Image (cartoon, rainbow, N blue to C red; front, side, top):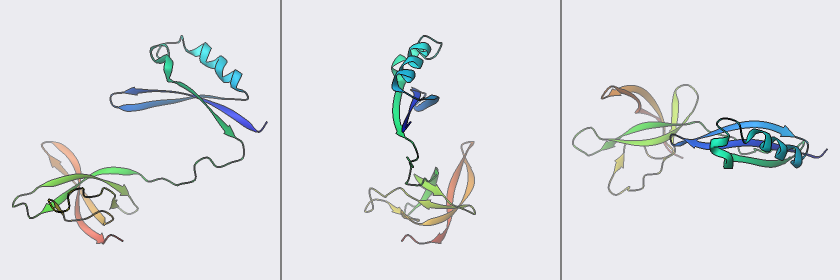
Length: 143
């Protein structure tokens, strides 16, 4: 055996993807038989087009890029005359630090206190009863 067949089921629920690993099979025909068995079951029957079969060669790395955990963070804007915040994405690092990964699409119109690539410390703050992560200090500059 040089490859396996991975059966998954995916559908959208409340603006995010729900993905289930159904099984790993020794042949495409075994995976297709599983689709046939399961497609009439509750939930699966409502999303019958959500099945997918992918072929994976054995003894190979299939994810080589690494990964980052991104979280929403509010950045303060400069020169606004009042507190104004820009929601961005930041990569969670060690020790409570975060790296801003969102690019400023309007650098002439908005001055971000912490530009893309900056490593910042954050604190939780409540806005209208909702707790959000806010960038409060610079750890090191971008680059």
